Length: 98
Image (cartoon, rainbow, N blue to C red; front, side, top):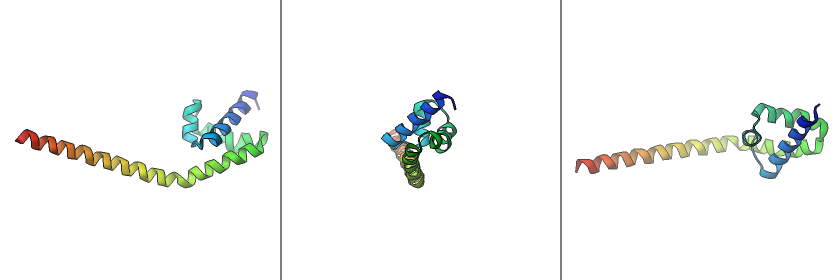
């Protein structure tokens, strides 16, 4: 394996562990795809730094377990915001009628 790939895998793992980041956040931060981050952590890193891979895996598993909660909160926020916008629109219409 090329050295820069190993370095990237170690950097991704350290970022995930230090910040408890998701695969998506790590990919955005490093400018690589989510699948590359996932492969770096689950396949490549385990061959070069097994203990680091295990620590990163713990964070990734926790993020996966919490994913449905974050998704539900995002949906809730979306609909609350839409409701607020609709309410503001109605108030504006009522003012213009007066």
